[in-house]
Image (cartoon, rainbow, N blue to C red; front, side, top):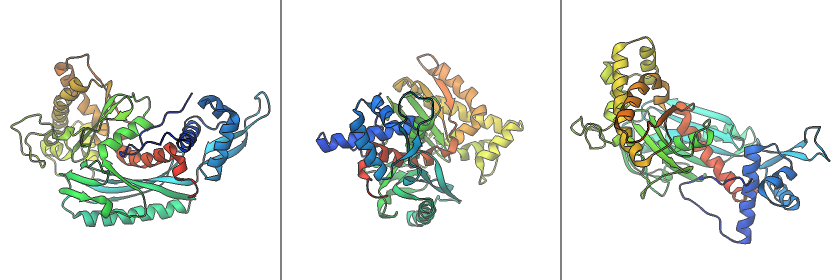
Length: 400
């Protein structure tokens, strides 16, 4: 079976239909196959992708020289015929550097080609109201710290992907608008380390990609909803992000659920974020904001605090109203709750699912809870770089 190539970057780069392009595609097929099913012998890889053993052996030798694959020794005993050498994706060499700019934190991690998190760094603190230069300067320090730690483990950075809570232009570097940071028209490419290939994307998009790549049994068609101070949404159709003409698809947080409601930071009124964002739920429960907002809400709800439970029921109702239009329009197989919503799901789901049942024109859409929780955007960012290496290993050959 041929291993599929996956979306890795918003640029949508495609390899040319030339002999060189065919070679690069075949290198990618080998990498994806070993990544998904390894350890495998050369013969097993050849069988799965439909190439001759000689052709696969040539490709494998190139990938081993580049440090992308490694030989583990003879396959396990008991197999018929002469044992081949088992191949696996290397635990050294290229790594994906993922970063997240949150309203209340910065995070960076390094993920190797096997998908393991090798290094991680987090700093908590309010970013709302700070200048982009100040925030990105602090993020740059974290990135360089993580890269240095990763290099001590035999890894080198193949690229940097940054998740942000806002709209990102098609150039995959410019934050067009991030209301909860009060950023407008910020070119992160000019502010972040220039030595690494850079991709910037909306945090909900990276969260959805993480769910697609790392989730347990996640379908190929789903609507992903996540939350921090704001509410993010992303749509996956046939295993690919639905980005929209300008790349702004999925702005669920600014769907109005009560058109005459309170003014939102986006300039609209009655947006979903005003009823289901973390600060909104705290206000409804009569609580003051703290660093761990979700922990406070979950703890109080678990302790039968009726004010908190009532606030969460209201948030679930608002989510259900906003999701109704998306579910009726897109007809996803599943709605996935990620981010902070995952931890609060026990108290959100009853009213959310009730609204969907009452308001949708089709049988009730399944609602599931992400096991990745708030880690989704950061993991999706790092894995997008890893997927870029798997999709075009020739592009990084010789850099190890």
